[in-house]
Image (cartoon, rainbow, N blue to C red; front, side):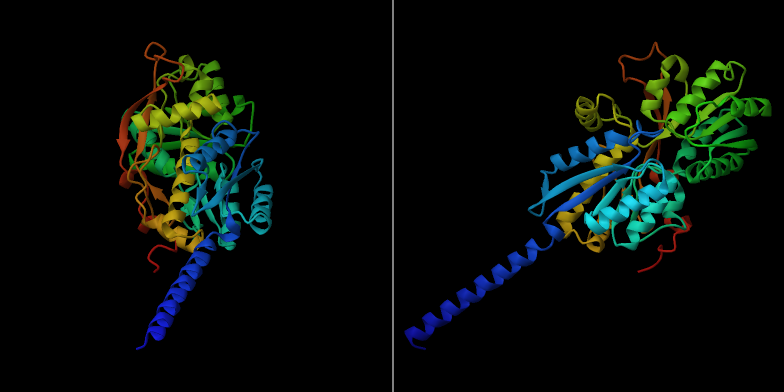
Length: 411
């Protein structure tokens, strides 16, 4: 081969290599749709659940984005938020607009079970991932499960496993439920009653209460007159706070009946105050003072929000951070690839250790039984609880095979 031929071959090879590299770079640049990853926090920003998720969830999500570096795969990460007002129709319309017009890649928050079910359905129909941190109903990963729906922090199965078990074993055999009259409340009552009855307890009765009720007097009097050992509050947020405050005013606990908050947040305990809340036991996914990593993050959150994080707000940070990590590892923001990667990951951070997302979309992880301190035990404004027991993931959550999700077992 002559010199000119060799030179020509080398030049041709070099040009081919450059072309391949350029093509690969162009392909990589297109792995983020629209050249931006957009995350939406859809939450109750002004109502009964404002303190347990709300604006604090937006702060947590932005912290996760900032801690990740503000970009993924070389493209910026954008955060938007809206108030669903605890109305499924408003939430669905917002989600539809976000996805169709705003090209939102993932929606998180969704602190209302009716809202969560509605948005999960809309988003999954449009191949969009939801990382639900706020809603409780186990239907999200049961018969209403979807390919792109993930339930991240807790559900109505995991809450009574710790709380109801502890109470029944300590003599609380007869239960009366004051229940939020929508999907979350009914699911929580059902799951709690199953635990109570399995342990040999009984359900004396129940009463359904509209969300955002201010006066619980008539419902508490029904519960009091039932003679049940335990009055279980299958509600959340300000409804739980108002229920417990009014029960205290009526002297229900002093009269020998026990109040069981089935979904209690650290913000609820703070609002009640230790003199009223002391001795209250409940199940949670997160407590800010449990580990060094949780303390460090929670103090940073406190500087921005002026309150310690609820388990839901901490869950939002974890969900957003791990979603971005899944995009980075998958090399794309394509929903199918990201959902597949999330299912492969072992999730360990300030919120959870050794968490795993199943085929049904449920993130299984340890839960914790906590007990509110007496005023004399507290050493600071947010030193409110002791962790009494760890509930292993396999105990805290239903197995995929028993979830009722039709996706389990499919390839």
